[in-house]
Image (cartoon, rainbow, N blue to C red; front, side):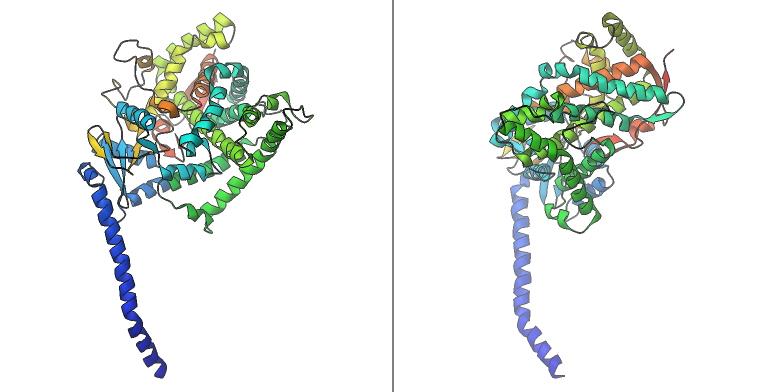
Length: 516
């Protein structure tokens, strides 16, 4: 009884402090809500999806990410709400754009005059994959990284890699020859191996030949490296759309998978990075364990000319380039194979052009590739209809900015749906049709069509030329050797998912037949 009375006295004496604490928290939250509502008042006039009173649209966004349908959600909202709308995550706004010209002008002009920079959330998400990287930096930190890598990915530099790319593509052809007919082949994993072997050869000096041994470090095990890349890429997407950074330390399956993937990638890359740094310190002294391919790799060149790079940042940058140089081109190639199977007019026209180029040069080389403008147009059309990177980063306004007559307050994130932009009927005539010819038309109306799949301005995709070169060679070889059909028909092009990038859910199974 005495204890009960004592407890009641203690409770009654602490109650005022508890009430004051609750009132203070409620007041703080209320003040923050009022301040944010007042700050972003100009955005209230924009259309917005139905939202939760406290969390805004965050539950819908996170649910879409979990279902790997985030791009579809943003696309659907763009179709329903128009070319500019606002998504509310808690009480913070994200303005979403879907007009190609508006997206291009916003990115180019905003990043040029400093009114827009990569958003803090996306920068932190990129840099938290493994360490500070090009995609996660801005200002001077971005500039010296971009300046170091630009020459390595220029069209003139990549021309000397045609032999490596052709060798990797020929391996794919030999695999398909053994499988055809009547075996079905999932082409998406096949193209993932192709693009990973190419980017690993160029950046890390690993031979593209599956049977060759890499003496500078562990072998390239494509399936294991790809699984690790997918895990860290998916974590980026979750964090960029609202997951907190500290959640990677929780004892969850996602966290365990992330740390295991990150550890595996670092173990794969560290010996090669350390060797490149050793060569820098020894002023490129020839080492007995260094192959000519590794000596000419981008990793060795960048380490030698940019002293700001150390082990941590070179490992992180290598992870970034492996991810960027693999999935984007691989998935786009899968969509190209699928679209060609369903569009026989384009297929046959492309084959005639490929055969002519082959016969004129007795194979594919730098000269014959110049004759394949139609094949490059096919790939551009794929990037329009199936933009693999439909929005993996966002910008943030540094001051009040006007976009299409709408005042966008300082601190607002700006995002875009490339999938919706690529199907804008005001820019692309007959947007749902597969028409590569639109990219070859020299008329005033079509000669300046935006190729938005590679981004815009100074931050345009570093690997644009490499991607176009790989895709042109691979598609030309496929057309030269095979006829094919989709196992699952049009659903392979319609049932899509998104990890960091968009990909076909069924891995694009195809039946190939050798040409007569």
